[in-house]
Amino acid sequence: MSKKAKKNQVWGGRLEGNPDEANLRFCAGRDVTSLPMADKELLGWDVWTNLAHTKMLCECGVLSKDEYRQIYEAFEKLDLDSFDLDPAKEDVHINLEHYLVHTCGIEAGKKIHSGRSRNDQVATDMRLYLRWEILYLSASVINLALSILERAQDLTEAVMPGFTHYQPAMPTSAAHWLTAWSQGLLRDLQAMNKDYELINRSPLGSAAGFGTSWPINRERTAELLGFDQVEENTLDAISSRGEAETRIAGSIGVLMNRLSQISQDLILWSHPFYGIAKISDQFVTGSSIMPQKRNPDFAELIRAKAAQASGTLVALMGIQKGAMSGYNRDSQQSKYLIMDLFREVKDAPVVLTGVIETLTLNQGRMEELAKKDFLNAADWADWLAQEFKLSFRDCYEILSLAVKYSAQTGDVMSLKGLEQAIQESGFEGRIQLDQKQVDRLNNPKELLKTKTHSGAPSPDSVQKMIKHQRAKLAELDANWTQLTHQFDARMAFALEALKPD
Image (cartoon, rainbow, N blue to C red; front, side, top):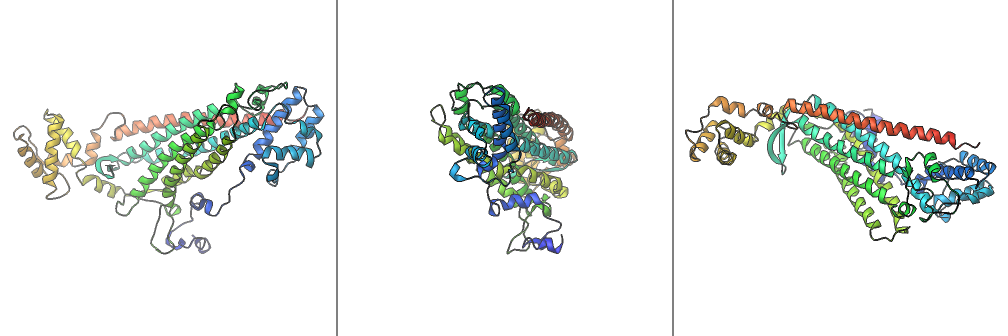
């Protein structure tokens, strides 16, 4: 890292290399970034909605070709970045109508609201916005899952301790742990794919919720906006505003809980007392007072943002609860909630991908921890039961005593401790052990090889999991690619179809 770059953070001198930009942005968050107006976020989408609606009105004879041409050319020259929304005009919809009528002097601008309401207009804008955000987030999650599987490929024999209740439990492998993460991410991707399918329907033309006498063609506007179909019942299309946001927030909430769990694992792995992993300098931050610190801020923020996602879901559910069928102003709040949620979480998978790709694992330390604290006690009980045709519960009792007696001289199972437990339990003569057997069962790598069923941590089982997950991820990636290409193709079609005749 250059001296100039180091000066950007007071803690820069402790670390090597340039800080990751996505991580800096993610950690700084709203402390140094202002939030855009919600309707500014919808400006481009509302222009598209207006063009699709007015093109359809032209085709249905409500607008003349010349009137549509004027509207099209006015929107074409509109600079989205510099266009200021006037709060006195309440929202993006009226601001754009005012732009046509008063700024551009287009009398036909007064006709653009024929056959629609702001109710169906904003619902359409939000679905366009949500489609885009889901595609972006899905791509990030796909990349994260792929990075995890890439790392797992070379770690099938890297033994490490598994934990329950934060306490040492049983041996596992780094690859088995990583593929647990990726398996969950595959479900998250499936959920978001389903969300996309459910929201890719057009509410435009529902008007206030009760239809219109104008000769409109809802299927045409759906086509011009790249939707799969219309949301048929007009009352449901309006009453359910906020439902799409809620479904997506639910999927994001589950995703963020998973990323929070991954983050907590990384916090513990990288703690000096565990010493299992080291997070790259690119992704840690320092302290303004303690020069030695390497803080996993990204992981702590992901935990907090997971809580925010859960809170957003509850808020969205509450907004819709008990509202009478039809439009209610309550639903407007759903716009702010879902936009804030996407803004807060969208970089989380991106940052974690970088963390996983640059993570250093201390395999010597991992194996050391896997050999101590009697992590093999349950495996010993299983082996005794199978080897000597005993009940598991009897063997469990033997191992409880064996752990107690072995702990008097160390932190690994000893032949002496086992023999004392066997004698005390009344199985002397039925169970005969030697040091060779003890050494084999005290070796976590040997223990993992015995667990050969599907989903188990043996190297062969994990390799099969990686193969299965890669295939599923390729399927999901292909589906995402298809949706993205479909989105691009439909937008390209719309750009051409919306041109005046």
